[in-house]
Image (tube, rainbow, N blue to C red):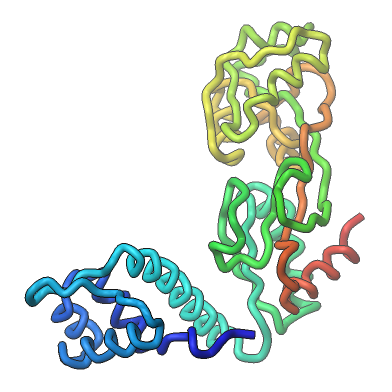
Length: 293
């Protein structure tokens, strides 16, 4: 699969990476517990193997050529991925790890309760969760898959639809002593808005027969903080109904006007279309297919 003659030794790559990061052969030697002579030999071996000069020798100082600076950036990523793979193997020597990027609110309220069932069904898989709010380049990360909200507009990925979403306009009792009698009255209240969904209020107004507009609003990056702001009377908010059960049941939030409306997007499991899914992801995807309504 690889042309072996183009695969440098780890020792040579570590020497080049340390020289670039630390700025001198002596500092690289100290970090790698080698002599300066050993560092120089590793770099010479690397230049010979690749067939191109990597270093500018300026008196007693070594500097990387512009081409070598580009090369070491890619080499650093490769070394990082290799280290992550080793850590994953050590953490789960009997199976595999599934590295999943999630949206915070969806991950906590929809995914987390299901993960316990997945763990019982697939004890050989360790699920590692990290938060990502926007689409990203899978090739530049170690993620196997991601939860995406929106439409099928993330290029280069496969989609598995998990859930549609409905949005309800809500506010705290202190801000809303009685329900509004028209949708237009929502504009008399301070409004709260998720940064990643700038058109939600416009769509809500249009759904209720009002001229679509993007009214001024306080911005939030997470639903969790926006819900707390709404509960404390800072403004009316459009919140997914699956996040509102307890707040509505305890009357910490009240419906502002009308029923919930369909959101602009849905939630998907996404994973790269250009690579074969690893076994942990295949197990997770098949399990989700069985668990979905």
